[in-house]
Every structure is written in C-alpha cells, then in structure tokens.
Image (cartoon, rainbow, N blue to C red):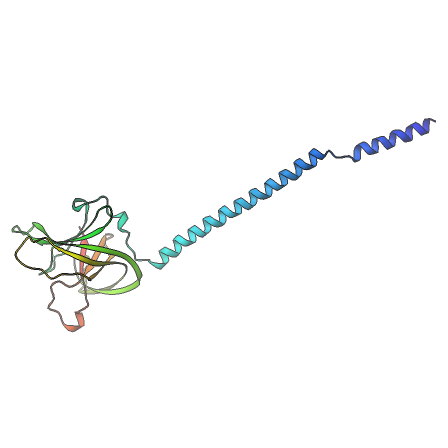
Length: 215
C-alpha cells in the first residue's frame, strides 16, 4: 500500500513539472516579436540614412565646381548684394548679384563723375542653374597673374529681362541671353566670368571671357 501511494505521488510531481504556464509562453513570444520588429526598424533607418548620404555625395560629385548662391547672399536688396570688381579697360568696374523673395538679379555699374564712384547702369533677371562640368578660357585678371587660363565651372547664370537704369544718355547694348559663370578662384573667394566687354581681340580669343573677382 505504501508503494502505491509513492507511485501516485511520483506521477503527480511529473505532471506538475511538465506544464508550462500559457502566459509565460505568450509573453516570451511577444518579446521575441517586438525584438524582431525593432531590428527591422533599425535596419530601415540605417538604410534610409545611407541612401541620403549617397544622394548628397552623388550631387557633389556631379557638380564639383558649383557655387551655392544661397550661402553667399546674406539678405535681400542691392545693399546685401554679392559684388564683383575688375580693373579691365572699357568694361564695367563692378557687377553685383542680389535677390529678393522670388528672383535673383544681376546689377551692372558704370563709373560716376568720381573715378571711384559706381552708378547703377542696368539690371537683369538671372536664371541660375548647375550644368555638367565645362571648361572656359579667361583673360588674366585680378584673380590671376596669368595672361590666359582655363577653369572648370558648373554654375551658370543666364541674363534676361534687361532694364536700363537711364543714368546717362548713352544707350547700352542689351545682354539678354548672355551666359556668365561662377566659380571659386585660387584666392579662396568667388569669381564671375563674363563676356569680354572690351572687345578688340583676335578671332582666337572671341570666346575668351573676362574675370570679375568678389570684392
């Protein structure tokens, strides 16, 4: 009889050990699922971040010589413009780039009665765009000691909507459709490449441009 009771007690203990609480199993399963979702979400964030970095690098590689005007124009209006100067003969002494809330402008200056005076001569609207890298040839100017040199550019300015300021009786030629270029020079500032205003060059230099340097 004693053996019989021991046998019954052993079976009861075995049944108790073999049962795992349902709540414990469900809790373990839920934690495993949450951990898996966190890993997937983390992988997605890392992947998205990686694509953004690659996109920025691709853009930089596509236009390695570009100039970002938004970083250079600190405010609106002529008083906050980016000004470029040149010592070229028979050429405007200064050219400015300004903006308002919706448009970028090119301002061309003449000398006033005083040699150092600058008088606004004409205004153009600018279409600013980054283009595939191209080479342009420049006459030597304040940004270089060379007679002529070749530079690479990406940032192109197209002039339109010519507005004469009528500061003198002289009528100036419209530059509508002209293309100018911005680039960083060896001095660490920005240069503006324009048509050769002085003219009087041989056929080999018809497309050679002038350089204006940031003041």
